[in-house]
Structures are given as C-alpha cells and as structure tokens.
Length: 340
View 1 (cartoon, rainbow, N blue to C red):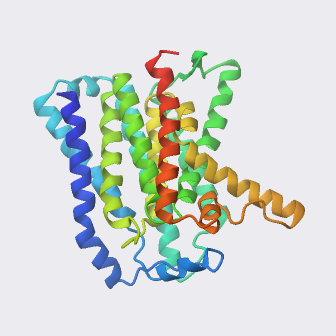
View 2: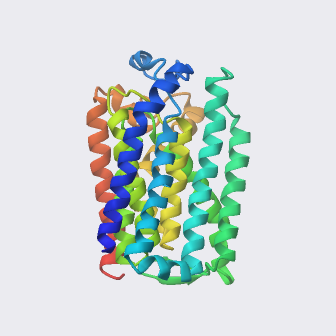
C-alpha cells in the first residue's frame, strides 16, 4: 500500500506539471516573459532568445498539489498518515523542507521578475541573493532544531550528536551546505533538460533511501519531486519550449537539500548530488584560475558548457551527466543498504 502511495504521488505530480504546460507556456508567451540569452554563453544559444522562462512554477504547483492529494489518499486508505502525524519531528522536517524550498523559489522568482519584467539582465545582485538565501537556510535549520533534530548520520561513523562539542560545528557548516547546493542546482540549469533530468535521478534515489529508512513523508515528497521533473522534461527537453528559470532551479535546489535533511543524512547529497557539485566546483576553479593566470582552465564554465565547446550535443551532455548522477546515487544508497 505504501508503494502504491508513492506511485500515486509521482503520477499526480507528473500529470499536473505536464498538464500545466498547456496553460502556463502560452500565458508566459502572452506576457512576453522570454529568456534573454547573455553574450557570455555559447553563440548557438542565441537561437533560444525569447523562449518563455519562469516555467518552474509548473513544478512548484505539481509538487504541492500532488503532496496534498497523496496525503488525502493516505488519510483514507493507509495507517501511515496517522503515524506520521503523531511523529512531530518528521512532520516538522516535511513542512519546514517544503517551506524552505518555496522560499528559495520566491528568491528565484524575484530574480526572474527583475530580469524579465524590469529588463535588468543580472536580476538580483549577488549580495542580495546571498543574504536572502543565508537567512532562509538559517531559519530552516533553526526550525529543524526546534523540531527535535539532535543528530546526523555519517557513514562508517554512525549517529553524531550535533548539540555539543565539535558537533555544534554542524550548524554553520549546514548553512553553507544548503546555500552551496541550492546555487549548484541553479548552475546546473544551463542547457535543455539537464537540471530536471539530473534532479529526477536524485529525487528517485532519495525516494528509495527514505523507503529503506521507513520515512513515509520524505518518500512521498521525493516521489512528488521526481514526477514533477519528468513532467517538466516533456516541455524542457531540447528544443525547450520553456525554461524553469531561477524560480524552478532554486526550488529544485531547496527541495533536494530538504530531502537529504529529511532522512537526517545530508552528507549523502555530496554523492547523490555529485553532478551539482562538479558544476559548482568547475565554476569556482574557472574564476580562481582566471584571476591568477588570466587564462581559462575550462573552455567555458560551468562544466556542461565546457563539453558544449568540445562539440558535445546538449542531448549527449544530459545523458552522460544523468548517468554520472546514477553512479553517485548508488554510492549514496550503499551505506543505507549495507547499514554502514
């Protein structure tokens, strides 16, 4: 019955997200919410100029509607709904995670709105975006602490107390962790279908992880995210008919982080989210190397653009990066499966 619930969550999220494309995309075109392609990107991306952006609202709606419908179904057909309601710690993790992802999406929406409507190509300033993201990250962690989070699980070490001694360092590191991965997902959204495909794999892995850990709420949330990503790929695969914008990528980033904290194993996101990590670190390396040598380490950063410049098609990059993510997700799942 629990497996059926997660299937329903994924299917509803897929149907809502994909179906909204028929309404949202024409509306975005009507509003002339088209993507502006910057000159710093590959020249052939200019053909994407004017493609509707801010399509991430489709995924946000898909996840939220599916979550509500799935819990309504569970309330009438399984006992898991009542068990989860009695576990305030898990319910807090779920609600706080969703709210945090929505706050990140709101920051992305402001950024998109400034770019598209106000015609300021760079959107929010780096300082403004960073400050807002750090506030959201800190508020999320405070909520988790107040909700009862007192330990985190690290493979080969076990449960680590995060309320005393060196364990207290977990909290400031976690703020940077959330901020870093949210922006890493944002960087990954650079070619048609990439961010949504990679995130679909990551969400599927956390669905399995939550199932193995017997955490119903996070299993359902993961299924909702995976379904939404597949629904969005229907419109975002090359040639993309809509872009998710920062609204979508920041939402995805916030939600994958919430999934890792929801099973109290955020360290596993380092492996499951290896593609995000590689995209972010390539950008950092490029900036540092250029400042030191005035030369580029990669042909273009982040990493997917480097392979574009090497002659790879967007479809090939999406497939290869998704397969790399699958390997990372397997590595993330092994400690849970083998009880390390």
